[in-house]
Length: 170
Image (cartoon, rainbow, N blue to C red; front, side, top):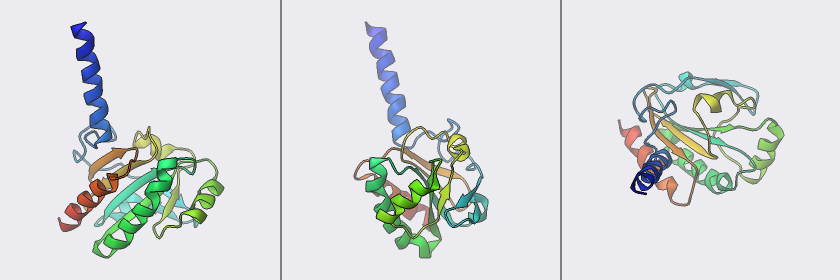
């Protein structure tokens, strides 16, 4: 019985570390190395590369139109983008659905000022090992992943704001 409790406790610790941004996209600690570069097409049809954002702090948010927490989080991410953009910060919204029309419909209800990219084949989502909607990654000015958060519940945006404030000052 004692070994079962230990195994359950270990699983809970691991799950907790995943949800609080301790584990990075390849299983390494967040901040342990460069964020994986990618190129995706924006809703406007323009290709965007993460590497082109070097020198800026970038929050990458993986989302889907069917995701309830994404509906709560999107206006908060837009407010964060607007507030810190003058300091070299941007949000990249990465929609993970096959149909771009789903993203367009969602954005009619929840308009944003930041670029929305399309990962219809889930290549970038796989690269970052996205297993929960939404998933948020913060990349520093040098292109290193510094924060990973899976899911969203009210109050999580405070963690994002704290991380962004720290990184724009570096």
